[in-house]
Image 1 (spheres, rainbow, N blue to C red):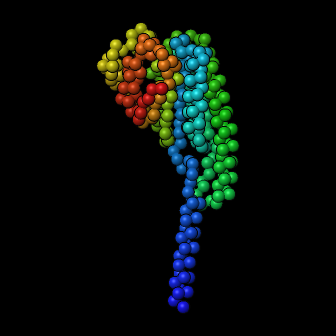
Image 2 (image 1 turned 90 degrees about the vertical axis):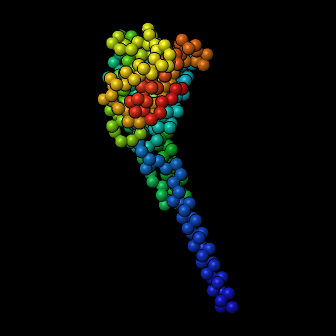
Image 3 (image 1 turned 180 degrees about the vertical axis):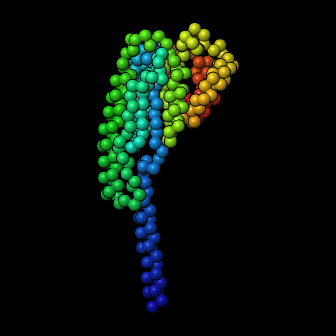
Amino acid sequence: MKNSRFVYSLFTSFFLASLLVSCGGSETKKPDNQANSPSIHTLIFIDKTASVDVQKPFVEQKYKQALTSIIEENFRKSGDTFEIYYIHENTSKARTLSLVCRTEMEDTEGVNATDLEAIKTSYDLSIRKERNYVLQQSFNRLKTQNNDASNLETNITASIPVIAKVAEIPGNVKVYYLSDMVESVKKGRDFQIRPPKDDTEAEEWAKIDADKLKNFQLNGPDISMILPFEPTSSSKENNPTVTHYWQKLFESLGAMSVTEM
């Protein structure tokens, strides 16, 4: 009888210990915890030249949706940075917005369910407030009209030194161009007058220009080109050789990925 009681007691102790370990494991799980993830530096380049009209309903809707998604995804915790530059004749000097997230994402390791819920609620309220502010400021920049002489040239190449400088800072860099990507400068490429005739020429030009820009290495950012064209646009308007040029140029300079949207 004593042996039976001993075995039963041992089994009960083992079961309770296992239960405690299991419960402890669920408490130390860190759902949606971004406290230890690398910071994100977001660079938005908005085309403010005559060739892109954000007053068009399709363009406005597409770019507002894009900005909303970008801010939701990239502006997450303290240290995340969000900047907007205008693309025009003086792109490198056209920073119009720079904001740093202040919401702290607390480490939830080891907290109980009640405290975890309180932490998440506090975070959600704080980050939502910050995101709404960033979004409103971004929309204001999007709808701002550029009636100055700077709208006569589209210097996208001048954004590359900006990206390279940011890429020197620890963290992840994500770059978004809200532009038709039609470079048009007096002393450089002018895709309005002479775009690449085919992919082969686009790659040749990208190689030549990458060599000129070799001092500005991009160090692995993700780059997205968000074009203002409707799905029914012709190849003359939405020229695939132009975006192919930029894809090859960015890749040659060290971009991790280049996508077209």
